[in-house]
Image: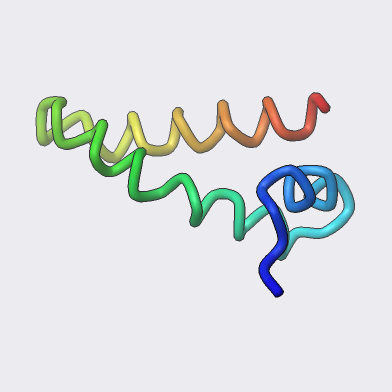
Length: 60
């Protein structure tokens, strides 16, 4: 059975696999949002968004 997002976020404080899964779950939305930006900025923005996501998860 697949874990819920809530469960994955809670586990990601101690489990890197759960953290990677959370990031993968948000990847389609990140990519979709990045497609609305300049091509040359996308890689940097992607890293910034993922860092912000990590920060928010670890803050819980």
